[in-house]
Length: 292
Image (cartoon, rainbow, N blue to C red; front, side, top):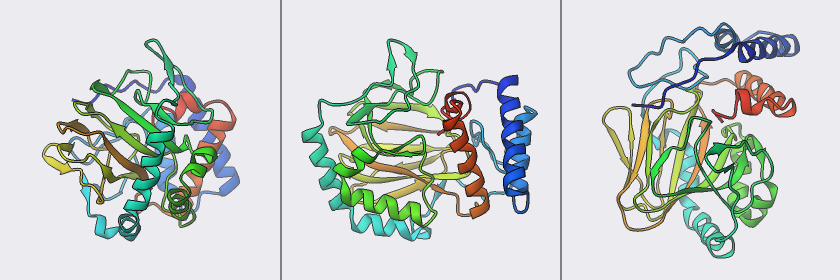
């Protein structure tokens, strides 16, 4: 079972109401009907009616988007481009493992989650997505951020210039969400517990870089996806999913989120405005951190 979700409190409801009113005043409402329904549902604390079993995104659920647990990489041409460059990306990752092995930031102290919105250098120990606790029961999960909380980590990008160029291209083409883009590293024996992601507005991608033998992703009830070096897979993380590393080597992937192909540019821009305001207003940890 996925981790239980906390109800949206009155403070959050008011924040969502204010944000939508402000965005609607600035951008108008044309083409944003689904976005308005989503934010007003959050403002009223109205649970959405999910379409499919085991699809329960934590907060942001947009109606009418085509839903399936696993998507075909061939439907996303940028993934073929990444696969053609996988050895270059792996080379930059391998250089980091040598130069920055002992340097990483830790986003919490003791057993209490501490939001960290500053620059992230080196491999950061990843404890999970919110105050409900860690997602790993065994093993270890670390990440090297290129984007963190929608903010480009310039120092890290300089260490991996070719990877950064590919990331910038995805952002320029309007494909990349940019909430979290990273190298994701787990040790043998790691289990990432069943959980759901923040929203059905995005699709999560992994490009295998090393140590993929024996590592499997389960999505929904019976979709088992093996990690493979040099190959991408893409899935909807609003469905319950978990990872088990039963191999013998350190597994590293290039991990990022693409916008769902049915999200419009207007909806994309609207969400970015609200995410930016959450960061600028110091509200990110309350309303977006547990999701993006």
